[in-house]
Image (tube, rainbow, N blue to C red; front, side):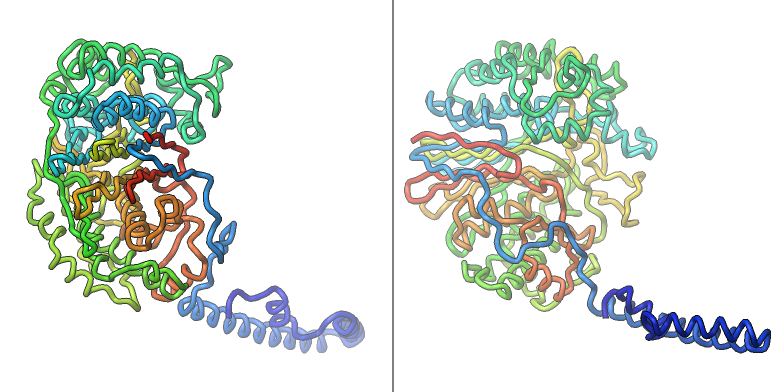
Length: 633
């Protein structure tokens, strides 16, 4: 029946009388009351009582009917602006076509830095390190020397894919009880900080696969840092959001506060001061100085002065890990490679393996009904994947071998595909195999590169929360990560009343689980088909999958695939999170199947995608954050 209109409620309580007729009746009743006394008054009261009782009955009937109807067919929540019925126009981002190479990052000047390194015959690793160092300056809210990263690298001549784990580790003195049940201490302040792996990763990658001198790779970031950069809208938005915390840290305040006392605005010049000198020293001394040299001593002294627990021994003992990738080969012949745990590449390859059997083509989204079915199948793959995520963790502490083998098994993918019901969905997470709760992770930055020699590199980096732990080392200017919040902690309450995943519990020296999934797709001929990755916390693997599906199977251009409005499901909460632009009829169709849908208003995930097609390198930076692409013809 829907919500009762005001006129219906009025009619149910006061009868059908309207206008002068009602006024005449009221006057007559008043006249009789005046001349007939208490007897008529009693009759009148009795009559009124009957009318009120009848009216109440009508209201109850209406409400009961309304409630029962609501359970049968919920009234759609009105959203502003309303969900569209027609596809949105193309975004303002540009799809670039180059002859030989491309660099995509979410920092415009940094993509140019990477391109220039390639132009000087640098390797894709040289270009990545230079781009990331630059990005750690201009996108310091998302990544930097105080964080960590995961990388996937393809060496075309060797036909070989390797991955690099430079994720942060828990300090040797860290333990769950140090937060006293207060989750904010794992998010902000000195206890939130893990041992950074970012620079160690750059240094080790360059030593193994770099071509240009280290100083030549680092100096562009030093120069941009000294000159300053114009604050982007993205950085400005989060500076405003975190203003109170930024103001509490003297080093951060000195960077982001205007001389008048307000925070800097979009377009105004940002200069980092101490960080620029740190980068200069790194260019001269090498990356190990932050782990065994004077910079290490300065960093530890600053953290301990603030109350942190990591030590010089933590920095000295930190090491990166070179690992074999996880992979899945699709029916069309392409092989998709991504990072093993503690990254989420295994979840991405699992979802692709499940969906590969549905034989998606561009006709899979050719009509509303086809789109509803296709999106439903994709969402179900998301739900099964996030159920498996609770079994992943740091392989140095948790045996993930069998689970990873299962997730990359074609037979298991077929088994899960057969469990997907095209006409319904489950609301119980246990139906998907979930026994504990996933821990969310947060903002990141991504770089995708295809080099002139056919090599490719995808790397995703993070300081976890925006501006990390909202503290910076006063002597080095390095913004420190908040990676301790990425661990599961049974002392922290969660909305769902479920146990946290023990596989991702905090232990000294452990790396937390991450959603980062830098990915490279190789064709049967050994040439790169696509290099792709994302920022956006738990939305990372689902966003990457969606772009891959749209580009490879729906045959959309790179830009069309990146532009397309996204959706996400991670089991908890039990609803589809979707971006404005998913068509209203499709959403209503998903609801009829049994899905709950809820639109998110933040930026969600940010993709950087570079593809190779017909001897052309095609790249697009996501309009949602405003990155840029540069390349070589």
